[in-house]
Amino acid sequence: MTTYYKAVRYDYGSFRNPEFMYGPAGTVVTHPDYDPKIVDASHYLSVSVEPADCTGFQWRTGGKDSRLLVVEPIGDVRIPDPDHYPNKRAVRSLRVVGELPISVAFGPNGEQVTAFLEKLSGLTGGQWAAAYAAARAAARAADVAAGDAAWDAARDAAYAAGDAAWDAARALVVRDKIAPEQFDILTAPMRAAGMEF
Image (cartoon, rainbow, N blue to C red):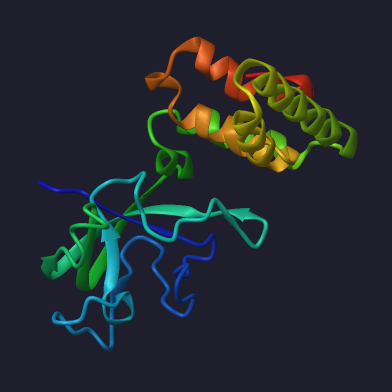
């Protein structure tokens, strides 16, 4: 039996259209303009067969954690765009049957990812400056090791502390699939800012 998921705002509203409310458990939602012939997502309710691949997912909305719901389609289920969104399904109606921790939406390392995101929200300006300096130093090291083209690419990729945070978040998501050395490289700027992994 297939399990279906829907990521929504903290208030149960859809990311795409907050007027569609998806909770709590027991809520039934029906799209008023459903058309099975139209691929445009404005004509169906979107669900996923993979909790870490809910289209439109945002970690936080309104300063609060979003929600990951387990839903049950009512009626036909179709794949609207299999080439671009293989895990996405389109339905006319669904019933909310439960809720999972939002960390599940970040994959098998989700608890580490959400803990990291929580830490990011508490960084001081000085810590962001340290992360920025470490990212720039890594870019300079790439210049020495690989020449001007690598320097340009590394400089552009590590131009701000936000990019260093993004690299660290991506490293956490795939931590179980990369070598420890790769993880250390991707998280070095944030560790330089005092963050522990």
